[in-house]
Length: 277
Length: 277
Image (cartoon, each protein chain N blue to C red):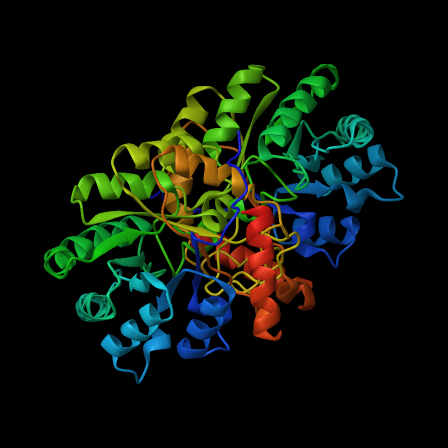
């Protein structure tokens, strides 16, 4: 049983990187004009700006600041780099606090020069080390399991089962899981693990896009909803059955769409959201 | 604990596709001259040839015919295409019999226009349908779980756990699993599932290559052993602990290596095998 179509845009959130050619100010104005109600801010979009004022600007445009992307990248064979990652994650927590975002998405990281098990241990240690800062700032941390094709350098957490294990081990109301259909759609355990995630109140974010056939680039060839083979609405039904009713976040990295006129692309996103999300 | 280095080439097998620019006759002559003892034959390499004579030619070159690649591709939304796939798998069994290969590797297939669950059901049905033919011919079938990045069109079987489940459900001495490090290295359950595979006498083939960082092509950018981040020797130790002591098959799809002089590439394969396999 899939969920019913989304009849309004009240749960639609867009990631700033989805419309990368736009500044955050342009994104805010355009999203708002089209009725989008949420925004997830990538940190590069804040460069050179007063973060508190930027958060106010977003809210003045009627946008909820859903999350800050991204923290993480904890593992390294070199202790100095691990320390630098901790510092950077503390900065991310500070930025999220100033922006008024109560969630940071963690792309956990991996170092191909060491065993995956070491990277996984360092991810646990890294999250544990920043946890008190996150709690103090009132900012939650969502572990995002990444597709196994990113296990070399982007994340050693590659299934939702692993993310659930990790969140349950850390066992804090400030640490949960981000479910992104692009990373997880292939997993035969997905429905069960989404259920488990919900039972522990760990499901903190839901990201959508599509998997194109063929996919010609490992990073920047994501599809608009409906262009690929991901059963987005079915997965949404599992996410909602688990108790999640927050924003549905459109996160598309696409060399193709970034080259198009972004106002037209935004219209396509909204149409695809109504039909396929 | 990793296994010891391989001090001789007695277990080295190479897939014909690894040295795609060579005909099967050139491959046989060159592999043999360098001391390689096994060959896995891709079906395209047999095109236009008498298959029995080709098998004899391989054995005259001192090569064991380890397996025929590949059967599978069972799923389709269209019943007619599923029937055609069954016919093609029966032809593959006949080819393996004539060639003197007692194993066919199954790349199980997927159809992005239908749910993964349907593709998975059709894979079970397809293998069940050709099983009697495989038994009559004395040819085993190895289910090869493919990396999740191929779940759209190449295989809906994406973890060794799924392959184990499927082989156990079919429950025939003629159906097992092919372990390829490229597809499976990221899986936190890999060691456990290799053990389980061995306990059921299901581990029938072991394929190696490496995962490069960055990987720039989803299909044809595999690395030579040692060029990437896969702990090949550690995985081999798990495979051997499970009871497998057959050929170690080098299967590399690489636009880069296919452009090089293949005699030089073969020397690199052998050197990499001794150091990293």
